[in-house]
Length: 331
Image 1 (cartoon, rainbow, N blue to C red):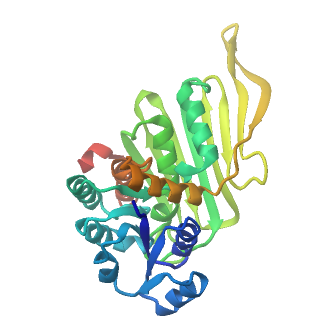
Image 2 (image 1 turned 180 degrees about the vertical axis):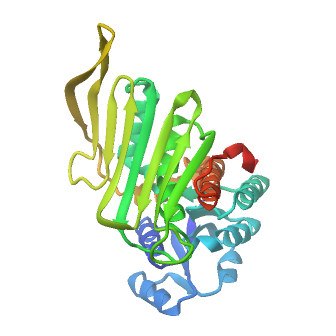
Image 3 (image 1 turned 135 degrees about the horizontal axis):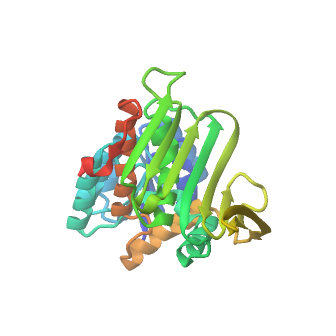
């Protein structure tokens, strides 16, 4: 079965998808409204079909998969068009900007028996895969709480706030580690650069069994930090994606009770090693495998819909000045 891929959007992030699918010998089309951007990709990958018109891609019977890397506000419309045309779809996060729209797309994919995969790239990071296995095996014990910091100076967006730009990564990882969605969320934030577009947000997620998480995201920060900490009642784990070495560590630390008093336990620290493969390449390979074998993607429509639900509830909380929002409110 031919795996002829069309990438729609070859800008800031899309050009990386173009590169990977070209290197995997699966690229047939690149589509973008910017003719100059298309010309640059054409010079890099001679022989690839170029167009500014999505209809050219969707009418090509040889195209098996459409990859969408356009601004988030366009995702719903473009994914709907591609699915309706009988194509399998890989769309960058978020799936849509509204839960009801995401739900419609998931139902459409099911109706068309099409692959719908969403680009939650960190789910394909070898360190996250290893951490997921460790947590699910119970090596950390009962998980008590998690926190994630995703901070940088830029890239400042105008079409979406920092919550929608950065936090989907962390929501996807945390809900995947816990195999659950939160019962309620609280989010607070501030906008400094542009009216109505939050530059900094802190989101608190409350799960069943008194498990909690918080996510701190900002594009107004003096240095880059991408760190996830998982605290269990037996051990603790840290995934630091900005570290040059030792990105994933397990700490055999915790609290022991002695004579009725809590006493910190300070013991070993273990650095875990894994194959350093580009997560985006793994993600692109996975999409091709899913097309070929009709396999359900790791980051399929329903999993992306859960992330979208948390995002929309968090946005509602932001708009309500940090009031708690139950996810059941969106059902």
